[in-house]
Image (cartoon, rainbow, N blue to C red; front, side):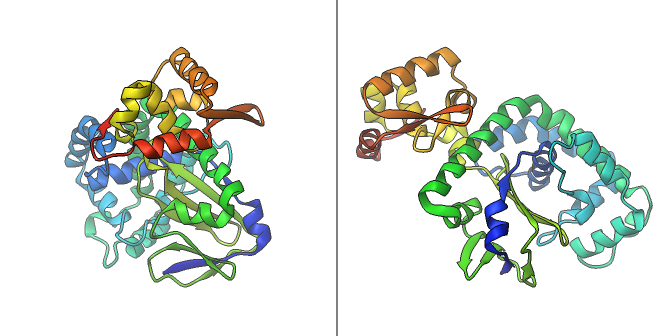
Amino acid sequence: MGWWQLNADTLARSRFALSPFAETFASLKLLHAGTGAHPGEDAWLRDHLPGYRALLAADPVTAQLVHAGLGKSWIADFLAPLPCDGEPLEETLAQVRATDPAEARANLRVSLPGPLPTALERDDLPERAAALLEYVWTRTVRPYWDRRRQVLEADVVARTAMVSRGGWAAVLDSLKPGQTRWLGGNRLQVNVHEYPPRDISGAELVLVPVTPGHGWVYWEIPTRYAIVYGCSGTLADPGARTVPASLGALLGTTRAGVLVLLGSPMSTSQLVAVTGYALGSVGRHLRVLLDAGLVERRRAGRSVLYRRTAAGTVLVEASHRPDTYRS
């Protein structure tokens, strides 16, 4: 397994960050895999996979570049730089384009692994990579980015609240189940590959959620390290929220769906993003749930967060039976 050694200061300064570029690269990985992990990804692939495959069929060099760069255990470094805070996606793409061609080929030899195909022994690989990433952003991510950003923000809120309940260990264990894990002794497992351990004490550690479910790790030795992870399933796949039939009959399907989601704190705007319901509708359901004592609210900075009360949790858990249906 790969693991990082980090001190208390590094963990205390770690933070979450949203990245349009990371979302774009995660979407490229999903297009490359061609198979979704849930119905939401399957629907997105039905809309965008034909165009992506047609693009690569017309450009065999770029097709080989993607295949070589997205290795089974290693990603070519130049394909997935970690943007700085607030850096526009265009600047990150410019960084990809500015990669030295020799460095790009060296990266590909590591990710492939093995000898580089003759077709990739050329100097325009960085430009081709940037053009493909720009295509993925423009055609397959940007039309949904406003909603995706709100979903990602909801994930960050939920995990930040988890820190107060279970500490950073609980958060790190939840990022990529089966891969990330707090090992104790100031050690963080970041994946299941047999990579040499790294001491990242004193470096910047960033946690980056993406809506496609496959994450990766990234570093700029010795200053910056990142774990990119798929955001929590109920947020990534609104169609997979299961509402117990009995709870839906009691409260109404929409109101019951809101109550189910509020196992983690969420704001009104985040509920709107995740559910797709109108703002007024969400507000009315929250008022009823508040009056019934099933949810509570508290202020966190500029946001007002809602969360199930103990009574609301008992009601949800008591309602789970095999005869459930999707909301």
